[in-house]
Image (cartoon, rainbow, N blue to C red; front, top):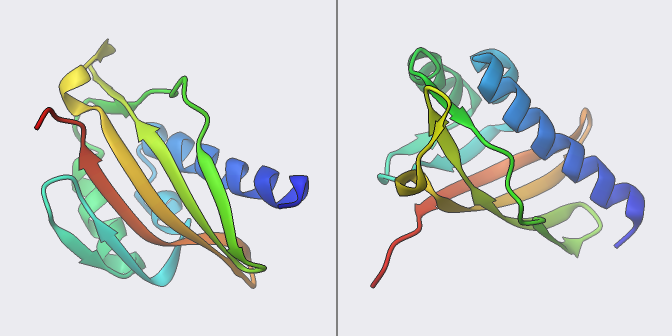
Length: 129
């Protein structure tokens, strides 16, 4: 995979964190394709950019913020225009890290006219079997 593609996807992921922490529901949703599939950690399946924006508008009123992960995301190019991204998710509430919210996030990034966007998002809480 080219360094340029990895950098573009890494910037997209950084914008995801930045828009979340800014409470920018429209900006957050714009990082996804219009028909994206977005599955939350509790199994809610959002279909499309509009549903992502509407749901996150309410969520962003809470004190939950995304924390920077110490783990570098795995980015694997599946074709010239599709990449599988697996990353760690961590968050804090009122500035206090909340390990109970740690998760593994799987995304599908696709190259679109406006640049790379996420076509799918799956958030799974880390737990013990």
